[in-house]
Image (cartoon, rainbow over all chains, first blue to last red; front, side, top):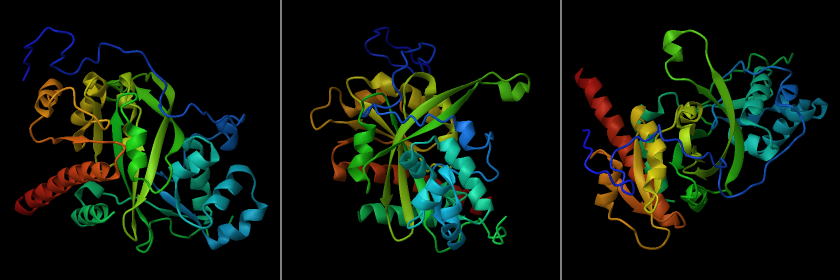
Length: 145
Length: 203
């Protein structure tokens, strides 16, 4: 396996070169816009860093009837999430992006709303990598796009 | 407390089924363009705190040295059929962020590692990460609509890509090319799932 067949630094033949640290660049490339809410993340979550229910980045959330009813009495991120997810299910990542708050904040606040019955969650399939039926459907769907 | 607090939080059969794949690669290789070429929505940007746990700490069980980095990532969404919603997450692939991705990779079907043929070394961290965790992936060399600076075979050799891993060319700006690249990944994912199912049937 370890075939160190060349010393030319221009043509690296063997990975990894991880001990060779490269300069850390900005984390994403296309837009330099950074959302600044001016509020510490732990303020939004009442000081908690962990959610009762684990929500993945792609877990989709939709406001329930109870959530719609309670919406007017809600404030801040709780209200924002319920309002955004009122008409269509949106993922944790989408809620985070649209509200300009970190993923972790959405996770904690949404987990509370979920526990209170204000949100419904659509979690990804547990063993998606083994789910032949789902993968087959996915392939057919992507092919037809 | 709501009277509906007993409402099940498990997914219901009729709801959407989210799945995700990862689009990784070096800075400026075209990850966001790739995502945007197939996404139903203009790619969105989100921030996540990625925790870097020093390797081996879990095994020793002693003092953990944690550093948390806020990482921005761009992602898109494709409604694949009436139920399946495919999310494509473009991950920052620089430097040593690689092993901070665990949270994102959790539950991902697989990854597309985008390569710029002029700077193939930028893809090393992503390749090492997915190989070491047995995440299915394909290597996609972004043509940027032009020529390749090396042949696919040269790139495969230079990156030490195993024979079972497809190395394809793509054009991150082209919907068709991006679709084909995603399909090449899904073929790998399907073959792995089928092989595992056969193995379990025999065992």
